[in-house]
Amino acid sequence: MSSVAPFQEIFGDFVVVAIPTRTDFRGINIREAALFRGPCGWSEFSPFLEYDTSEAKTWLKAAVEGAYQEWPDLLRSEVKINATLPRVSPDRVPEILAKFPGCATIKIKIDDFEQDHYLVEAALEEVPDAMIRLDVNGGWSLQQALLNLHDYHLRFGKVFEYVEQPCLALEDLRDLKAEIPIKIAVDESIRKNLGSDMSILREVADVAIVKWAPSGGIAAARELIESIGLPAVVSSALDTGIGISHAAALAASLSGAEYACGLGTVSLLMDDVVVPPVVPMNGVISVGRVTPSSAQLHKYRASPERHSWWQNRITSIWNSGLSDEVKDLGWLN
Figure 1 (cartoon, one colour):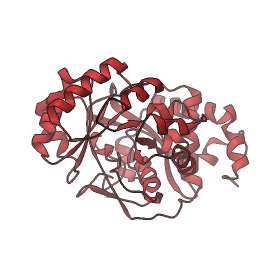
Figure 2 (cartoon, helix red, strand yellow):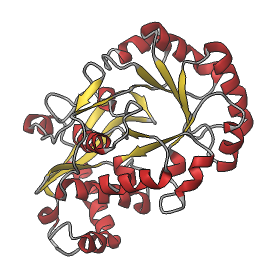
Figure 3 (spheres, helix red, strand yellow):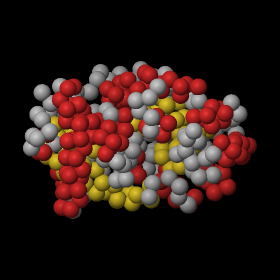
Figure 4 (spheres, helix red, strand yellow):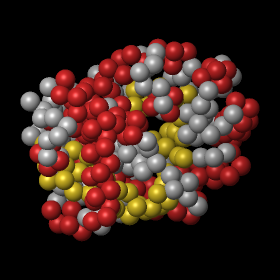
């Protein structure tokens, strides 16, 4: 198939859904996703709206792989999951954590100690033995990171499994790693530097956060993890159950299973396109191909305008060079 092939010939049963979120997550209260089906099953394309063509192209490559390629051999039938706690008022913490039954690890989005230590307190009140992950999204300078993490460690001790992307600059991460008693995980340092030498991350971090779609698919993510050479946590980007199923397959294909995966984020949506929804039970989710419910697709179908917007976005990315890349890989033969 070439770039001039009819859209539906490549992206079968194409549908765009718009699902409300339970909280304001990254400024989002409606999560849109483009779903389609290929010979191997359903897949998902859902880069955030602000992503440019270059970044979204990697997500579309993953989506096409998901629909046209079989998964690798899976080493387990379920994967452990962490709870995800957005920046909400502390009184909402019990409500949100109740959506993650059995999850003994809690990832908390934070800005700083002064504003957000109450979230850690509230989380530990709900799950006293939980391991806590702090996610900063690269929001601190080195000095801010030192001050905030000193305060968190002084207040809560050894409850922290790691802090995710406290700083963006690699030199700041290297200096921070030498000063703090908390492990460092990197996310943006990976996603924003795909194609560069990833071995340097071993000098500045302890854990790699890898996501199915932003990595370019399961095969690309497995190669990426090997090149980084750090223990990996497979995470998600607020996908529907379709996207989560592919990320769970990635996690289940890896030999190491040291850390819980960040794949419970369907619980942050008001609903899923899959019935039953792909959410954790007893701290795990099952691994397997899933199919969206026709009733759910109808219920959450986006407007015709949004459908056209996503179709145009995919067509533009496809014709920007991805069609030739996929053809060279032999995925559509």
